Amino acid sequence: MSVVMLISLILLALGFAGAEECTVYAAVGRNKVIDHGLELLGQSFHLRWTHDHKIVYDTRKNTKPKPQTTPNGSLLLTNLQLNNTGSYQVSIYDNVGKLVLEKTTHLCVLLPVSKPRLTHTCTDASVSLRCDVGNSVDVNVVWSRNRQTLTGSTDKTLTITKAMLKSVDLYVCTVSNKASEEKSDDVNPECAEDSSSTVLLFGMKLWLMVAILAGGGGLLLILIVITLVCVCQSRRRRASRLKEEEEMRLAPLTQPTRQASLHHHHHPHPHKSQSRTRPKNRTPSQATQNSRPVPRPRSPQPKPDDAPPIPIPRRTGPWNHRS
Image 1 (cartoon, helix red, strand yellow):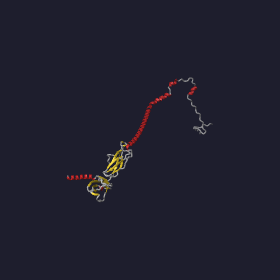
Image 2: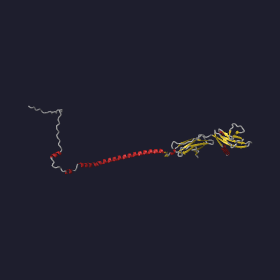
Image 3: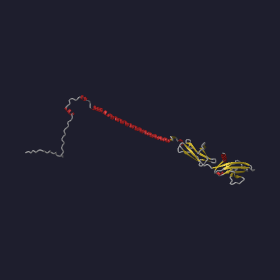
């Protein structure tokens, strides 16, 4: 149990030490000035800088390689590398060797973040913007629209609705760590369609549904008209057939009446004809004229010259010879 507590205390101490290590950050390949905070221009002081308790600069000693310093005596580190990480301590003494200042700075050199690449993807109802930071780790992402920071947006993906999207909007993502910062190029997310006016109906776009419904309505109207025409023609044929059948059924009953009507029209009643007054003093010649004419006998037709001779019948009895 005591061993576990000891290990926990060691880890806790290392954690606090790690928290104290990084008070200043710098990126690989960059330059960094570690300032001591005093104004020493024009004064004579003994200045010493150490890196992890190793002297790297001393005004009274020759150190190789000797780093550069500013006119104020601050330490200037150029073309930083990862091995430059560590603790830098400055000690300043006056002319009589009295310690004036002692200060420690913990420098952490980190890999710089790469420039992000901003892309966008259009969907039916929204636009997704993605900030690609490459292999950078432990980075912070900040989004801005038209140079104004969007608070609350720290993910690598930003989703906006198409109703909020405007054609003049410019989006930028900024990625950073404790040592460096990079911004993406401005991006104006445009979609192939006018996303602000796209409306969905039953999961499909409105214009597509309108086209489908219009085509289906026209086809339905044509089918209704054709059906009505066929029904009307069928009813007409049926009515005509029923009328013909009715006339054929009634024909035997109406024909005697028609014949009697025709006979009555052409042959008047006999007593009407007897009531007529016959003309008096009719002469025989008049009666002969009214009587049926006697046909004349036909005149014998002349025989043609080339007619064959008429054969004489042969007598079978004995001939009587005159004596």
